[in-house]
Amino acid sequence: MKILIVGAGAIGGYFGGRLLEKGEDVTFLVRDRRKKELESTGLNIQSVNGDCGLTPQVITKDSEPQAYDVVLLSTKSYQLAGAIEDMRPFVGDTTMVLPLLNGMAHVGQLIEAFGGQSVIGGLCFVEATLDEGGTIVQTSPMNQLVYGERSGEQTDRIRRLKRAFDGTKADFVLSDKIDQEMWHKYLFITALSGITTLFEQPIGPIRNLDSGQRTIAALLKELETVMQAIGAPIEPGISDKLLEKVNSMGEGMKSSMQRDAEKGQPIEADHLQGYLLEQANDQGIAVPVLETIFTKLKLYEQTVKK
Image (cartoon, rainbow, N blue to C red):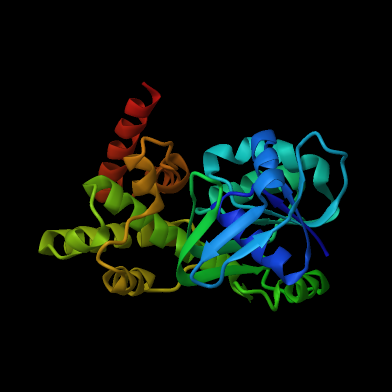
């Protein structure tokens, strides 16, 4: 199976690297600067799950068009429009497009670009970053990628993809409820990123305060209410389960949004919190905690643009 990874950053580089390490036919679609870097140093992974140094196949958006069996992308939401145009020459009639973005708004954008049949579901749980030398540093045992047909069907193509994904040093999991799992992760990430970025603290000090605990619970309940109102396929009482998950996390856990804000980098406020706030307003649902968080994030974005 011919696999194209859009980008060779922390997430795409990690999972693509694990597939390449296994011996799969993997190519990375990258910018010119990253192409030169990979051709010079190779693709290097430093991980608690095992280090490796690889020699990847790399192309750019100007390379000769050809169709791949699957295209995996893990860009930030504000990079999605550009990524769609970059990958368009490499998506054929039977290509599976596997996105690992947080949130749900990107699914509609990809369907509009490539058609509903092409887009399958996906999400991942991994702590990874790209260091100054271009090495992918993966720091915790969790390195899971979950994927599946959005319909939940066990199709021939998804079984072929499973054979390609199985046997790597990462945890690739085929799900028959990927749509629900994507919504659950969306709820969790929206809450965690919003709370930690609002208070500019790791999750531990926030939840250790009674007021912090109430704020987290209230936000989770707001998000659950909005998702129920728009017909999202979430489990009843999912906010209570996710509160338990928040309370089981390490004291020093920071969201990627908070880390980006600390570095003065762009954040995904519109894609995560903004999308659900818009849905809440359309449904006439009051979401004061979500609205407060979104206001904080938009004020931050104004300072970054300046």
